[in-house]
Length: 74
Image 1 (cartoon, rainbow, N blue to C red):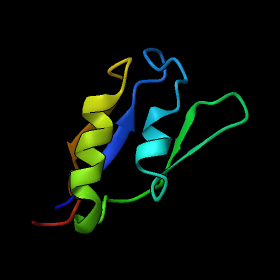
Image 2: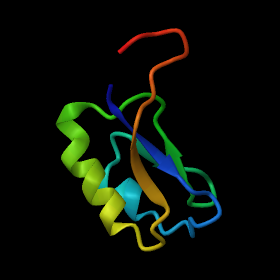
Image 3: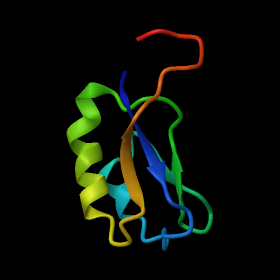
Protein backbone atom coordinates (compact mmCIF):
# COMPACT_ATOMS: atom_id res chain seq x y z
CA UNK A 1 0.00 0.00 0.00
CA UNK A 2 1.60 3.25 -1.15
CA UNK A 3 1.00 6.90 -0.56
CA UNK A 4 -0.89 9.33 -2.72
CA UNK A 5 -0.94 13.11 -2.99
CA UNK A 6 -4.21 14.92 -2.34
CA UNK A 7 -4.98 18.62 -2.58
CA UNK A 8 -7.69 20.54 -0.75
CA UNK A 9 -9.06 22.71 -3.58
CA UNK A 10 -10.73 25.10 -1.14
CA UNK A 11 -7.51 25.78 0.81
CA UNK A 12 -5.25 25.92 -2.26
CA UNK A 13 -4.34 29.47 -3.29
CA UNK A 14 -2.45 28.50 -6.45
CA UNK A 15 1.02 29.56 -5.30
CA UNK A 16 2.61 26.79 -7.41
CA UNK A 17 5.32 25.88 -4.90
CA UNK A 18 4.31 22.22 -5.03
CA UNK A 19 4.85 22.03 -8.80
CA UNK A 20 8.26 23.67 -8.46
CA UNK A 21 9.32 21.14 -5.83
CA UNK A 22 7.78 18.06 -7.44
CA UNK A 23 7.36 18.57 -11.20
CA UNK A 24 7.47 14.80 -11.74
CA UNK A 25 4.03 14.46 -10.11
CA UNK A 26 2.47 17.93 -10.08
CA UNK A 27 1.71 20.26 -12.97
CA UNK A 28 -0.26 23.48 -12.94
CA UNK A 29 -3.46 24.31 -14.79
CA UNK A 30 -3.93 27.57 -16.69
CA UNK A 31 -4.84 29.41 -13.44
CA UNK A 32 -1.84 28.08 -11.49
CA UNK A 33 -3.66 25.40 -9.51
CA UNK A 34 -2.09 21.94 -9.13
CA UNK A 35 -2.96 18.92 -11.22
CA UNK A 36 -1.75 15.81 -9.41
CA UNK A 37 -0.55 12.67 -11.13
CA UNK A 38 -2.92 9.77 -10.66
CA UNK A 39 -1.61 6.80 -8.72
CA UNK A 40 0.78 6.25 -5.85
CA UNK A 41 3.88 8.34 -5.25
CA UNK A 42 6.92 6.30 -6.32
CA UNK A 43 9.13 5.44 -3.36
CA UNK A 44 12.05 7.34 -4.92
CA UNK A 45 9.96 10.55 -4.83
CA UNK A 46 8.44 10.22 -1.34
CA UNK A 47 11.03 12.49 0.28
CA UNK A 48 10.33 15.22 -2.28
CA UNK A 49 6.58 14.70 -1.88
CA UNK A 50 6.87 15.18 1.89
CA UNK A 51 8.83 18.39 1.30
CA UNK A 52 6.17 19.69 -1.10
CA UNK A 53 3.53 18.99 1.56
CA UNK A 54 5.41 20.77 4.34
CA UNK A 55 6.38 23.73 2.13
CA UNK A 56 2.86 24.41 0.81
CA UNK A 57 2.10 27.99 1.92
CA UNK A 58 -1.64 27.25 2.19
CA UNK A 59 -1.20 23.80 3.81
CA UNK A 60 -3.48 22.44 1.08
CA UNK A 61 -1.36 19.46 0.03
CA UNK A 62 -1.40 16.12 1.87
CA UNK A 63 0.31 12.78 1.48
CA UNK A 64 -2.14 10.02 2.44
CA UNK A 65 -2.01 6.26 2.57
CA UNK A 66 -3.80 4.63 -0.34
CA UNK A 67 -6.67 2.40 0.66
CA UNK A 68 -6.89 -0.98 -1.05
CA UNK A 69 -9.62 -1.29 -3.67
CA UNK A 70 -12.85 -2.95 -2.46
CA UNK A 71 -12.67 -6.70 -2.66
CA UNK A 72 -8.87 -6.77 -2.52
CA UNK A 73 -6.94 -8.06 0.44
CA UNK A 74 -3.72 -6.44 1.66
